[in-house]
Amino acid sequence: MVALKKNVSHYNPLPNEEFMNSRQVEYFRSKLIAWKDSILQESRETIEGMQSDARNIPDVTDRASEETDRTLELRTRDRQRKLISKIDSALRRINEGTYGYCEETGDPISFKRLDARPIATLSLEAQERHERREKVHRDD
Image (cartoon, rainbow, N blue to C red; front, side):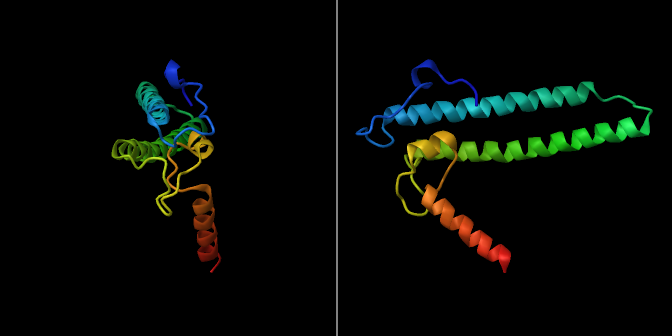
């Protein structure tokens, strides 16, 4: 991920610290905004690159290879578009005061989990239950 503001870049909560206090909220808000900005910048660079690379390639194999590269790049951008939606949702939850709490149980999501995956909406336990249920339904 990208660099965060100086005041929150090396934040480690104290064991007795209140969950989702103002410092933690600002840490995650900054982290999410920086992540989103990074994705948007990469997207702009991809679009610019694709526009400047629009050329006529006479060799069929080279043209096919370039088309494959473009298709993969567009798939990546589509995944990132979905990720931006999740980041925006996390920022909305911060504004609503529900960020950091499991959507299934209402329990706090561990700081370590949120730090690793700031868009997480489920606690680790709830996520594992969800994945087990999905696996059972896939195996049917």
